[in-house]
Every structure is written in structure tokens, then in C-alpha cells.
Image (cartoon, rainbow, N blue to C red; front, side):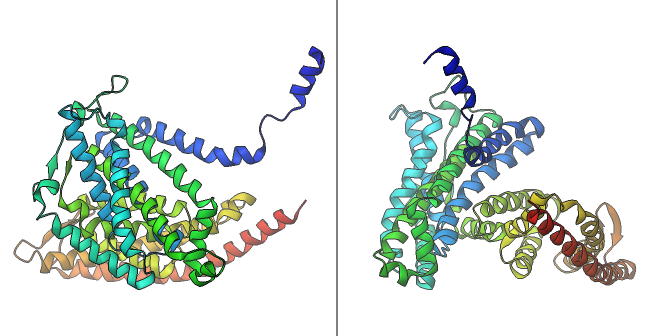
Length: 435
């Protein structure tokens, strides 16, 4: 073959198949976002929040391997997160004493192996049953480990927990991991790696069998697969990734205590998965980001942020059972057809009275909290930087007007939104039908 033929052949060859670009483009974009975020949000608070979001994403996706993929509702998933964190912090302290030469970048893997080990031990018992029986067993194991944290003081450190110092481990490329931005990039790297690995698992035959066991375990057994074995493997893999999240948590906080294995983190990860949407891979990612932001930011705005958090969860479960991801995916055809802009005016029209109504509800909640729980303190308070007296009649009247008027205007906007949606959907169908 002469040089001209070679050049002609290379020019005619496609650079990359479109499917490959679509397959890897999402992960390249995700990596670019992880790299760019610290340059956009450079404050110390933002860096801490983003680090916790990365840990929460891994933890929520590991939980969704049980709930969303295999149909196992667990009330004690924090056990593997916490035990992985304890294994990681013990290895970190051994590395500081030069007993084991483990660099900090591999400590999350130690946490993952710890989560995998305990997943094998506890999963061999709990995965023998499915459904409600599995949920109750997981709750019992969570209580067992949580109570053991105050008994086995050598491993759990009692009430004080176990502390460490990440800067004293083996350095990598002169990174001491003292500055939070270095810890963020470590968490971001592991987060991206775990996301890719867990997504790849969903595309394997084993991932499909997990879905089969979730939907119809009897039929899966009929075609030759043991549902208990599938549940056990999924449980162990879920514990492995939860342990990685725990190891990253140990690195980030440099302290691990009994709260890591308590029911609090188990409830938080369950809410994260449901809030984002267990039916979609991206759902727990969205849920983890929202829950982390609400926990950290809303707690600075009000003392009763848990109440608002619970109300939000109830609203999502009641009005959007598929989670936030289902609402996003519902609009995907409109995005592809480039007709989404037709809905924006209608959505803004409905958003304004909805915010007024929510402001009225929040005002009632805050004034009630002030007059009951804070009854020993003066009734004077501020609401969105507006001073008012909770014992006076005018704020209550204003709250009632906000609630009633906002709901009435919000209700009047529904036909407008419905009409805009119908027109946008019709336009999207017309464009998709056009060759």
C-alpha cells in the first residue's frame, strides 16, 4: 500500500463511533465538572459542602444497589458505612506509626474492604429473606452494631470515637492533604471512579438479574437463578461501596465515632435515595446533593430545619413518587425537541404564588415555634430579616393572607401550566415525526 492509499484510508475512517461519544461523554463531562467546581466556588464553606456531597453520592448510590436495583429495603445501611470508616481510621493510625505503608489515596479502598467483609458476615444472614423480613433484620443488625459501639471500646473508641491525622500519612506528589481543596479532589476522584463502577454493574448480566429478583424473584428462580445468591452478592457489593464512602468520611473529618453506625445516617441515605428517585441511576446523585445542601445550609437559617426537611420528603413522596429524577426525565423529550422554552413562562407564573404560599406556611411554623418551644424568650423575632412580634395579630393575619392568596393564585395557574405543557408536548411530537 502506497502513501497516498494510506492517507486516503485514514481520512475515510471514522474518528469515533457516535455511540462511544454518547457513552463516555457523560463521564468526561462529570470529570470536567468535578475539576471546575473548586474554581467556581472557592470558599472554605463551599469546599466542605462539595466534599460532603461527594461522600453522600457514593453512599446513596451504594444504597440504591440494594433498594433501586435489587428491591431490598434496608434500615441499617450506615452499618457498612460506619464500619468501613472505623477500619479506615485504624489503618490510618497504623500507617502513622509506620506499621503498614498505606498512602492516604488508598485508605478509602481499605474502608471498602472493611464494608465488604462485614457485608459478607451480615449478608449471609440477612439476605436469606427478602421483603419486610429483610428490612426488619437490617434494622436489628443496625441496633446491634450501634449498641456495640459503646461496649467494644477498643474498636469503636467509646463515646469519644477515634481520631487521626491525615497529613502524617505517606504523601503523594507532595500533596499533604492538609488543605481542604486537596481532600476535595481526592473525594472527587473516588466519587467519579465509584460512579462509573456502579453504573457499569447495572449494565452487566448480574445487574439485569438484580432487576429480575427485584421484580419477580419466583420467575428468576424458575429460569435457574437463586434469588438469595443474587441478593447476597448485591448486598456485599453495596457494603463495599458504602465502606469506601465511610473511608472518605474518616479522611475528611479525621474522627470516627458511634454516630457513623447509628440510625441517623441510615435514615439520611434512605431519604436521599427516595428524594432523588430510586428508579434512575442519577436519582440518588440528585438526592445526595439536595439532602447535603439542605442539611448544611438550612440548619444555619432555622433551628427546626428537620421539620422542613420532613415536609419536603413527604411532598416528594406524595406528589412525585418517582423522585426529582422522574420530574427531570419527564422533561427530557421536550429538551431534545428544543421546545422546553415554551414552558418557562407558565412555570414562572405558577412559581410566584407558590413561593408566597410557602412563605406564609413558614411564617406560621416559625411563629408557632417561637411561642411554644421558645416561650421563655421574648416574642420578638425576625423572618427573612423582617422584624416582627409573634404575639401580635398582624403577623398572623399576614401569614393567613399569604397562604390563602398564594394558594388561590397557584390554583388559578394550573390550567395555564397544563395548556403550555400540552402545546409543548404536541410540538415535540411533531418535531420527532418530521424526518
